[in-house]
Image (cartoon, rainbow, N blue to C red; front, top):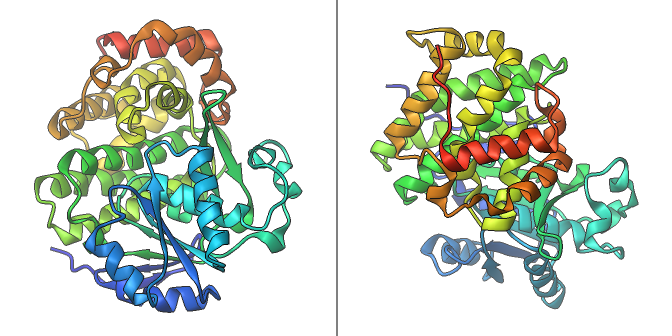
Length: 388
């Protein structure tokens, strides 16, 4: 068994990785120039011992703990109100992807005068921001999935339009990430599985996205290998610190790799989450094989390489497809979206919104609203062709 070693990584940002590194939270805040940080976390963690200890380590730091899954502009506004009321000078974003995204956007908006949606990731809209009005962030992930801790964006739901919007700026990147596997030990098995499959889909879609980006491709391949090797272990034994540490690494790798692009899985998952409030990672895990089948003609060679890296007994598209279905069964991932409470009655809306989602542009095959609607309908009903 490989020992879990402590290490400092500086790509794409500074990452302090290893068991017990949360003890260095105060030092991380000091490195970011924070003297009065606000801890932004989700409702499930707000009253937890780990948040209490983090607050105490920072001299009784205030906590904003109203974030929920699929965070909205209202969560950002609530965090901003707490930030300004307390005279804070930075944010500790502490929790899963929703808390990390919200915390980063709160820090970003803390010194802006324009409305939130003016900074959507469209063209050069990010240049509208005042860089001096962006507060520093220290990110502490407690799930191993989204990789938001190493991202320069936050996904926020516009409840008026039911659309998830990506708020982007290069300075949203956290100054320090504390990647401590001990913080993920208490995750329920289903959350471990869903978030872990989210990391896999990030790597898979990034690797299959068109374009030349060998750095992202290499990271994506290794990320998939780590998930295949360690996600079943983390689900079987939640106290397996080595597996937990490896999965945190894979999550950060997925978010690093998808700078190259994503694809149809995310394009569909975003509006599904907006309309049906589903768990993002779980939605991705359910959708994956349906999108794979649609993209088969364009990803045959890529799937063969992934199969080699994963050392699958059967290579090519069919071998990887069988493995995806197999690991989903092993982890207890549902096979159809209807099991997540998703119905086909909004299929046309899902297809139309998926087409304009930024992720759609990275799909290996150009997709239309009709294509995406068809994939969505198949995933609701469980229609998958036999693959050989």
